[in-house]
Length: 108
Image (cartoon, rainbow, N blue to C red; front, side):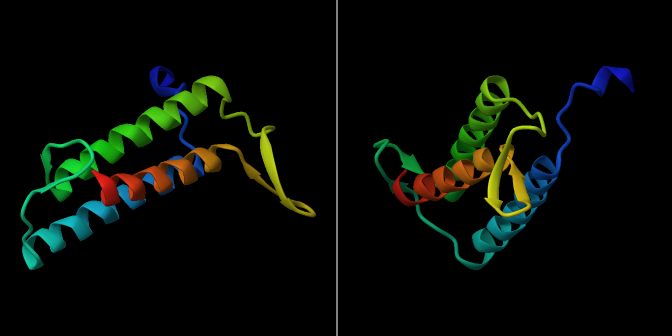
């Protein structure tokens, strides 16, 4: 088990994978219930829901890897929310990823 000790298995990472599984389930249901035609967004190429999901997942991975590389996952790096409550800074990367995913689904 020493070969996977470097992996950052944190609560935000677990939530990310749960949200990913939920997203795939919802997108599968949408594909069956509401078939869609390709649309052309700011990339000027036809994309489907699956294409936009793939792009948003790649962007989320890059954001998290950059965050971990530049800021780290040290629990000492926290964002004070209010008196006595602090949130690990990796949550901010998760929020940025979700906002970017919404932007991708709306514009690409």
